Amino acid sequence: MPTSHFFDLCCVSGLVFSAVMGVIATCSPRLFGTFAGRSSRWVDSQKYLAVLDKPFNFDHRILPHSRVFGCLILASVSVLSYVFIHR
Image (tube, rainbow, N blue to C red; front, side, top):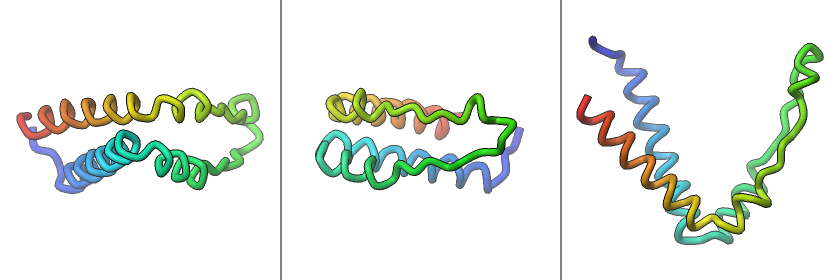
């Protein structure tokens, strides 16, 4: 079953972005923490989603272990890239 080129581009772009974040988290936890702090913005949703509209701050769980998190991201990217290439 053929897939569209747009889907392929989105998959590759997501894998590249994830790989870059994994390398940053593994090599420089301080830079990863800075990036996470600057990029975490909360977007207000509509009123009917008010029950789900509660921020969950998991930075205090991820940032102390960013090297392990980065290695997990890189492993996931490797597996997904292998599956994507050999489909």
